[in-house]
Length: 448
Picture 1 (cartoon, rainbow, N blue to C red):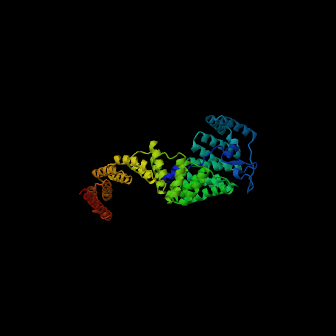
Picture 2: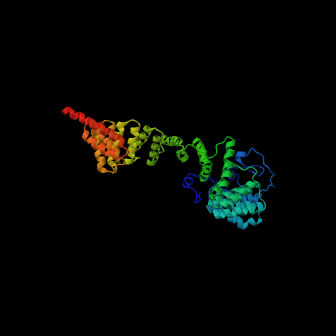
Picture 3: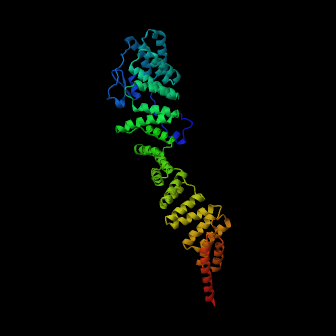
């Protein structure tokens, strides 16, 4: 079903139209395919409410004469064999030779067969024309009139004449003693296509509430239509509420993804994480962006180990590219998870892939924290050579401390003095300068 241009991408991707079943309006098979039963009185009732009694008296009943019944049997023989072209030939012969003698009710049934055959031939224009002729006949049973109105409404949907479909459907609802929930869904979809969201919401809510009030589970596409309307209105709370029902009754990965996205829009990061992790456990996160998003959520909720596992597994599977940025995030996650042994190699790879020295500066700090002072100096030198270090003062502090730990006090003092030029590091650098100078004096005095 074609969507209106104004409908959002999310809605276009997820809205599911209710199935449309079409056949001769007067046939009990047809009415049942529409979710209707034909009662002996000639009235038509929704199957879900067939135990209820009619609210009005039926009209005078009409019947086919034996000779006309035999005429239509020829048509039925062709349709039973799915020979629609042959059925049309028989109909035209009957129309030309005998229809002038048919009663109004018999003509209505003839036009009804025409409509059915033309529909089966996918000639919807002529199908609509003949179903219209049915309604113009004076002698109509309740079943024939109701079935024709509903079938025409559905044909209007097929032709994307949503306004016409709504008009016919409302006429049908006016005379139908008991209106089933499916009819309200169809009406809601018509209004939805016309971007009349208030009317669409009213009708889909009626359908859903009727089912839920009886302890029934509404159909999946009913929920998706209801959710789409609320999404269009920006009612995130209601969208989340409906998505809860969808993941409970129709647990698909796409609904968990949407639920995660809605939680994110509402700033509920923990719920967003839990929903997205469910999709991950279902094996349905198959894109780099999705996996990295999950990793960031884990880190945001102080679960760095899981973040690292997600990225590491994604890289090994070839889903997450080993870019400098992704490797940096992986290294950070391992470091936050207190696994320095795994953090360092990933940061080394990240630094090599970067065209700036900032990652080498960070790597120098990691080496320093793990008493790998010579490696800290090497990484720091590479950082300075590449340039682009965001906090050069902090790198000089790292170089100064690494040199001090290696007892290279003159180099340490030089690095600390450079760091002290930045007021953000001055106080700390001055303390280290004093320490390094004292240590240098002590060592020199020992040489005397």
